[in-house]
Structure formats: C-alpha cells, structure tokens
Length: 139
Image: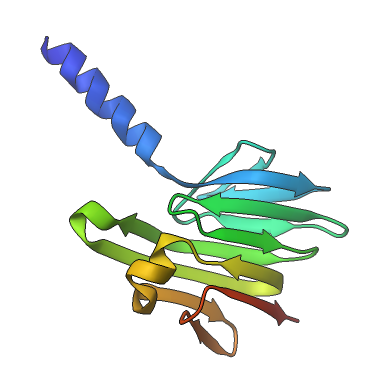
C-alpha cells in the first residue's frame, strides 16, 4: 500500500511539472532545460526555467496551463522564469522574459484573475498586463 501511494505522488509531481504545451512549430525550435538542449515538437511540455529558442525561419505556438497563449517568431529567445497559476489556492506568479525576437501574448485566466501578478520582461523594461493581448519585438 505504501509503495502505491509513493508511486502516485511521484507520478503526480512529474505530471504537474509542466506549465505549458507546444501547440505549433515551424522550422528549428529548441529548449534549453538546465544544461540540456531539447528539440521541441508539437506536444512537448515546457517547464519553469526553460529557455525557448527559435532559429531562422522558425516559430512556435505555446499554450500555458491557464489558457494563456504565446507565439514566438524567428530568432527569438524566451525564458519561462516562473509560471504559477493556481486559482484554488489563490497562488499567482507569472514571470516571463523575451530576451530577443518577436512575441505575441494573449493572457488566459491570469489576465482576469490577477493581472498585476504578471511580469513580462524585455531588456529595456517590463510590460504590465492590463488588457489581454500585446505584441512586442526586441532586437
């Protein structure tokens, strides 16, 4: 019985590790996770701490757990510093960063429940989420 409960807890933690799923890719898209480089494909799970990198003539479409959507264009570097949206526990902490490239963000539940808990960083400042959609480019 104890081994079964332990197994369920371990599997639950593994399943909950992801914060987003890749819905679309075109070209060469990679994720740096800790010290590994992973080639991304449709259905790949993204985690807190992941660095998403699109190459030339490449793009990616991502859907976060709360329904927020992100699209990145070619030659982009994007970091998921933290994505925590747990309405049942009233925990909201979203910290995203576009280091380079072009992004379109459409907030999901977080934009309605706790927009002030969202940080979308760019090299020369940050974008506050007050509406639901925006497009930004960093050269």
